[in-house]
Image (tube, rainbow over all chains, first blue to last red; front, side, top):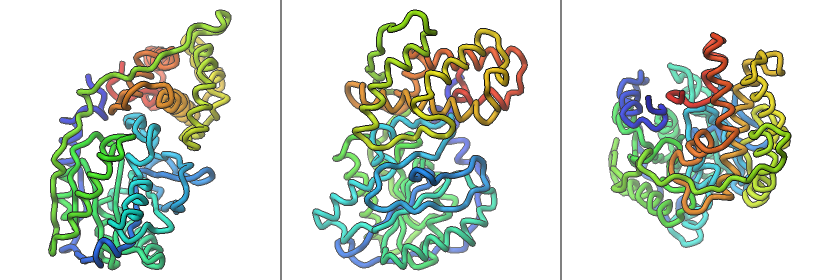
Length: 155
Length: 228
């Protein structure tokens, strides 16, 4: 029996059969030119600083704010079936903050947001909380930060 | 992640999702998706490879040139979760023959952990215990293997899971400091369970609890599903 997290066939089967919420035809916003746009990262890797964190289970829908300067981040995705080695070696493999700053320095993107955001990946089946509560709140926070583009990464 | 993309676009932001789960992005009609056929947990593909990570980001940002969506593009390079070089990471010799091997090993590796922490200024240890408590935690697993009841050695169901998490983090983080060469997907997990005394004692404790018919919910999470 193979380890679940390494079993690509099992993961594919899981992804194909996962019950998913339905959305109306999606909004699709065209941002300002990339070289003038401010970029934020939102990750569902449950990243947090010391003192923050997420509850086990699927009922924690809050988000954590990650200041752009923070590198002392903890990986809150605790599943034993998850490979944490990449993050242990380099946070950028989950949270590419240093790569974004390099792209800003070289003028490819306009800037990097002062804040980034993390949610837990494991949410309720209806995802109603992040649709109606914490997700819109996070969007508002990014709009107030002047963010144009959101890069979403998971685990 | 796909839900949040919809929420953020509805609020007026432009989004790009990096995901290895193409079917989920397709079914949810995510506005912009870069399908990255990388192992879970490796959104940018390769740790410590700046050029590769930048290539992934530029491919993601290129999606912004599309005038309408939903749109999914495939990143052209695939990374396997299984077809990788094992971690090259030496373990210390026995230092104190009076101690159980796992406890001795964890103590001997503390300096490497400290170097890793000093260099990265981050650790994911702390779900239940600190790095300093790892040897004592392993001594508890030794006692379980020797026949003591898991609650009598000081664990609860919650602390057992969190402690195993922290022990594995301790080893995986220091392995990234000691390892020669790149950190391949699952390489630290395989090194921990297959090569270290700590991983072996946790697997043994898990088997002992299983054989004593302890509730599966207590012992199952001590190692990934599929490990014996």
